[in-house]
Length: 179
Image (cartoon, rainbow, N blue to C red):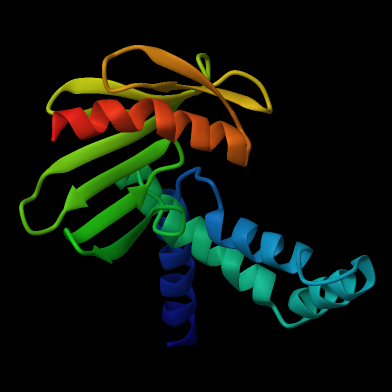
């Protein structure tokens, strides 16, 4: 009987290891990142050692290896890295999902979908809606951005209170005329 149970356990372990897939090991990395920001390096080391002795890191690694990485391989999303937040506003409830490259935004009541993306090469945030892309802001340097005006022109804005007020003054007359 013992031999049968041992053989079944070994077979189950081999089968589960064959279904494991390479992934981000997000649970283990999140735990490590949390430990790294607790306090100073001595407290971090004590927590790290305690988590190693009480097999917290081992359990997270096994969960990543056999479950979370497999889900990530087959679905494309790791449950630990993809997050959907619900945001209630005066205009309705929005569901916002971050995929590490941008944000998918859905108005829950109507199902309207928006995509907010950052293009690294142009340093521009843009909004995609109804198969059209609308650039929102382009970073020029650490103290300046380029912002669109309602008429289609772009204005360079200094990242300061004075710069923001100047941009509002430029955009406000045009916005008021549209209403």
